Image (cartoon, rainbow, N blue to C red; front, side, top):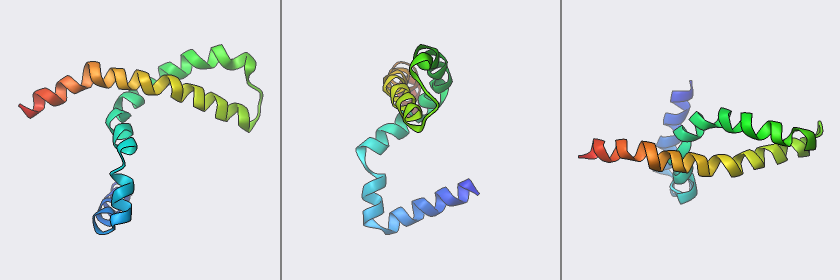
Length: 96
């Protein structure tokens, strides 16, 4: 089901110039590039950040948003470094 949905999204983006601009956005391209590193590191970053912030958090939606923002602030640079230092060599080697 997810593959079919993704295929339909790609097909629609090829037909629609507005959707193509959104999907071709440099920010979304960057997020797509680091997404695997993001996936690999998210649990470790959460395990490190949550105990540090636990005493500041309440059981509210704003605390959850704050936790997510802090985790993203840490996770995005970690994922980018992981991509640059580990993954990019594979992609360069694969091209040659």
